[in-house]
Image (tube, rainbow, N blue to C red):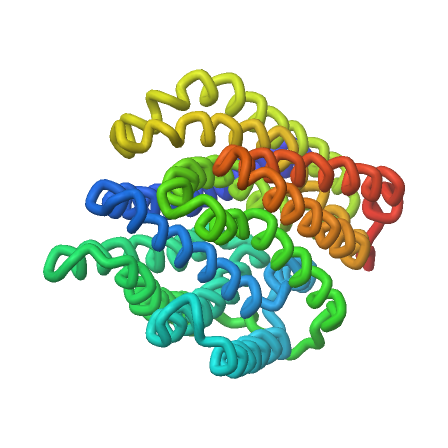
Amino acid sequence: MNAIWRLTKGKKALIHDTVWQLLNHIGGRIAIFLLFIYYARHMSVDKYALVSVFAMLQGLFTVLFDGGMNVLTVNNIAVKEALPRALIARRLTWIAGTVVLTVACLVVYNGFLQWYEWALLIVSSAALSVVNLLAFSCRGLQHPNWEATITLTQKFGSVLLCLVLAWVSWVLPHWILVGNIMSSLVAIVVALSLWKGRQGLVIDSPVSFTSLDAFFIMVVELGGWVYFRVDVLLLKQMAGMHETGLYGAAYNLFVGLTVCSNTVMAVFMPRIAKGHEYRRKWTLRCLAVLVGGALLSVIFLIPLSGRLITMIYGTHYAGSSALFAGLVISTLFMFPNNLLNYLAMLGGKSKVYALIVCIGVIVNIGINFAAIPHWKAFGAVAATIATEMIIFFCMLTVVLTNWKGIMHAHRD
């Protein structure tokens, strides 16, 4: 009876966490996606390209300000079942230091965007990094309802503020950054109110990962952003704003698919990190769900890509349909990559992972430079598929070679 009760409780917890993570990722993504559709329908394709540029740079800065500590934060808290004060101090110190360094670099190089656009990008990214600290801490504690409350407050608040600003004035790309800043402040207040008065959630304990671990993961995350989003900048410079806008529309729809893999990883990460005796079981379950999700995406979405694009964006974005279909193919490698990458980091192979991602960045940029002048946005899609494929096979080799060590990592 006790075994049956524990099994039932485990299944209920899994369902509970999955529902909240689906609400968290799908709800937030839908909110941002609807905002991007609003902008696309009220702007020319050329002007909409600036929205994609802002999104790319904000994501890049946020990764830099996170310092590679999000996944390590989840692992650290999942094992200790509490948040060390030293971890909070380290995260906030890193954010402050990287903001100062970024500002100093932009003083030297102040081209490409106006100074106030750079300022909004930096402040918005720093605020999002603080929200990430609080949200990933809740994930480590396996409080997905708290995490969803924090992130949805930020995302829905951002969308509402952007729409209000667009309604009372003009539809400007800068409102996305302003909305992010204001809604992030509200989300931080909400997070602190959730934590207030909860005993035992914050403890005096050393951080269980080194700065070198975080550095390698930051290299990985920065590399991921570069090889996934540098194509926007290259398209802008080499193919023009129209091709950039078409690719941006396809990519924004494609990003909605990543919600599936992000949700799966958010549910399974704490369980894989904490459940040493059940790590193999949780890993195989996670892999099955990720591969199944990728196959379903390819089977159902590629035939419908043309209708989806024109229905959502309008007929003037019809050129995005083939781009979206190509990006969907990359999920066959991208979804399982998420699990392989996490297993490599869990097993202490962050350095190897960082090296593989750096190789992927070099290959991606090379393919983009060679392909974009000839095939424009299709060249960027081909570079994405090729890069994900290369990283998949490299990471699969790393994980299989170190399987036993990964399955026994961090046993106390």
